[in-house]
Length: 482
Image (cartoon, rainbow, N blue to C red; front, side):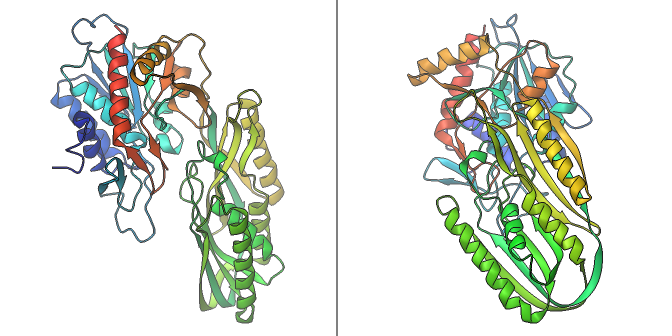
């Protein structure tokens, strides 16, 4: 028996636990996609799997709903697969180890949970599996690689879908109905570097203890990006005699970086002073961010080196200036919607290789023109630094729809179930609804989900009680859409 087997709704949590047992990080989705195909085959349901491994499964309407307007149930099969320092789980080949905290919160030992978006897939499979839930014809669309630019949604052919009502289950705040979202893209900036050899000592500095988080929905929390902290520390060292050997930070472009590190080649008698500066700058940032970043720390390791390959002094200076100048965080708030971020950038990944440093950033905006203005700022910065920038995973935003049968129906059901009105809002994060709205004319869409906290991190949790209430909301809404 599984960890979740005694909890309700059993029909949903059974599938969620099965999904968690299958490795399904972004770009590692073959097994989870095959699992979905096997599910459809076992039940004799029509399905389609495309060459990217997106899966669509169809189910006829239940008795009395055969002629009702179809409803698209949509989520994504990939997760942000990250783990804590010291965790030896192989996320490419091993499933998650689930546990329950405080009798209600599902989490995973040492790793992210993937409630975003495994719970959507579990809800969809429970609907497809049931012979008793009243529902219109269902078109379940499960996409791949949403977390790295919504690549599956961008690729998928939806010309054979009949539904024009889409229920996306990829939100993490119960009681919040998302009805519009920001568009975005990833910007990959490459700064060329020249290298040389040198003798001395190698000082390795590792920055840890940052909170991290989702670069869209948590960009307004005021958290410190580890990559920007690294740039600030290196800039404080700019008058010292050293060269960068290696630099690395962050894990995903859409995750606020929570780790960073660098290795410097320097003279042995300079080490104590450089470590002192690093500690001083780290303490400064801990004071500045004390309310949101309580655990920041810098750890060091020193070893002698002979003939170490590192960047030249000129390349080292150029990299430091780029990191220090790189925009990050909120760029503009929405002038019309209170407390809503309109445009932002997250410095997600910094890495060095044989001849360059690559910085991958996530750009978001509900204004298409502002998104491209931000991209142009990166173009200008790269031109100044002698580098280049390219765009990947560009996706459209999703505009608010004035008239929505799906939103009105779900709002009425929510009010009857909860005794209050839901919050209806836009979100500063990418949702696949924007892509589907660009592909399906006159699409009526809404995004919901059960309560989750700290998604895309090893602190991620999913509430069982909220999962149960949201399941009831979904079933009742489908029953009303006859």
